[in-house]
Length: 327
Length: 295
Image (cartoon, rainbow over all chains, first blue to last red; front, side, top):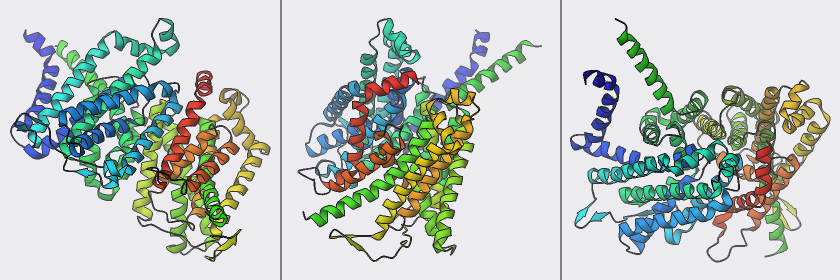
């Protein structure tokens, strides 16, 4: 028992650290910390979808912010302008975004690699322009404010503290669903597609069908996250869904190691803290530092920060173990 | 609409199209030689514009040397970008390389904002502000400088690629890097030359554009995207096709101003290029997939 514990102490320590960070809002840092974690939770949901799409299936999307934005705007417009129940609005947004992704999936997945990247980039920008220009619906560049809050019966999610649990409930649900997909027959099919499309096709996997379904799933995730984003901020503007937003989402997925569902939380957290908290300390130089970090991370750890850290951790553990056996 | 208005819009379209064409040429050259889409391409236009303004106004250098110096600096930054960032990440995946070039673009943009200026700037015109009359339309003479520069640069580039040793080596490397390295062409040197050339083309676009319109350190983003679409229309293969792609987008965008109906106002101008891009990609998807498979 003790030996087992000793072997697992590192895992236990990590579990304790995670539990510590998750439970912190109970006590102190109530406002600031809960808000930070809400954003990390929201971005994690989008990133998990991107990881399934990019890491497992090997398809690039430089326009994921479009789906994120669709979820946000459809929820905002339905619940504010048309007085639809926010939960129902969220559901309709997810269904619409998923259907949209499903429909565009077939033509767009006839493209590969660089060309797929271009097409998704174009699509993301077109949606961004629509958010900005369809001002009779979206409020134009100024956006929409005073969007209603989510509520269960009389319990309104009107504080960051309450929304923190709401967001992480969705985030963990999405993570568990994704984990199940990855370990199922579908997950194996996706990895086969990543390995070689021809080989996957030859053993009877309908490659296009799988790619389109995963795109639709990632779009539904992004839409959910977008809805949560809107119900958290109670404000929406096109700025949150521009090209740089799509890039940020891809960076989150890449830093999280792409082929790891749990790495997504790490990637989303690290990128968000970096770009929205730490960089502010550099004043006007923030953009310069951000660009530099992007380049350096891609050059020195193209497999992502998460995988790199895991390697370092593994090495330390081995060294510790060797140290332990030698008297 | 009068014919004078039409001519005015047409020339306006050809003018902005010429800038897109110069950016598109850069995209095409880099992609042909290295198979990298350089998302920092638009930043070189911005650099050329801001540098020429700063050199003329703050450093007090007279116009002609200032213009050439700006193009030279832009080209040097292109070389530095290749040597420091791209070469180190050469074996990275498509996604990683895209993020590297986007990171470099953000870096260059940020530096320009911090070190050059955050204001909107406009350089002095090459040949005075007096507008001239073309078929009844009043035209800024700088527009003619832009169009003329694009035509001359395209012709020079064509002769460079067809008749000089370096140009032929670039072409060979674009067609088959393995075979060309067998006959002694170093693909890395060619990639470096491609980046220098593309950055210089962007810089040229910037110095001729700066007297025509207000530029600031964020101007590179949209110019880069338009140039990217221009190159995509040309299939990232033929420089001449990229030039026509750029002109096409410029003219269509310009004429779209009076083609607005219903909810589709001229505010959707930026979306036109993107819709064109998607249509072209989808129409040609069969051919593109084939290309991707055969490398």
